[in-house]
Picture 1 (cartoon, rainbow, N blue to C red):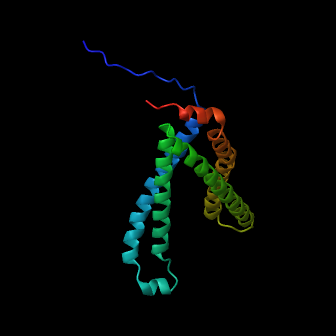
Picture 2 (cartoon, rainbow, N blue to C red):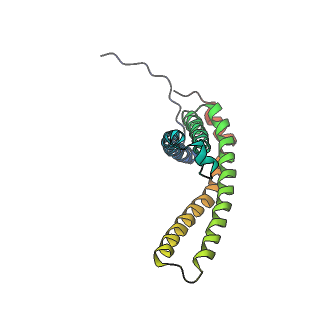
Picture 3 (cartoon, rainbow, N blue to C red):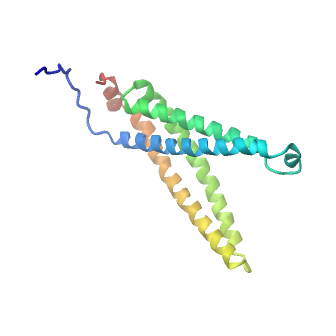
Length: 180
């Protein structure tokens, strides 16, 4: 009956960088959920651990609470910037370049720490006389460290590419087109 007047559509070409931005946003969302839950658990622990226990050497749950809250806030900011980038906002593109570089540095640093832990755990597990259950648990933990290490090593060039491609002329021109 009535046909809606539609503006001219600007077809944008397939952009593989959008897949990487989606992955960053989804991983940030997972980190947000996990650290929000951890913040709730730490908040309960703050009331349960006495000052005397902390003075005697027990861990201070306030440190964990602050870390979890900071991580949840950072994950929320990354989600918002990723969404802005996926919605073709130029401010999102510029900010996502910086986020990709920060995540690259963080992934490289944590990969280095993970490699050190993986090596040290290998040294400990190679000692004679370890109980079988402890050896099995250590090997499982070492495998998990290795998988995380490989994923971090792979993420470093991917994040470098994302930062580079978001600053390239063809991508900047795509962001200059009006988003409908």
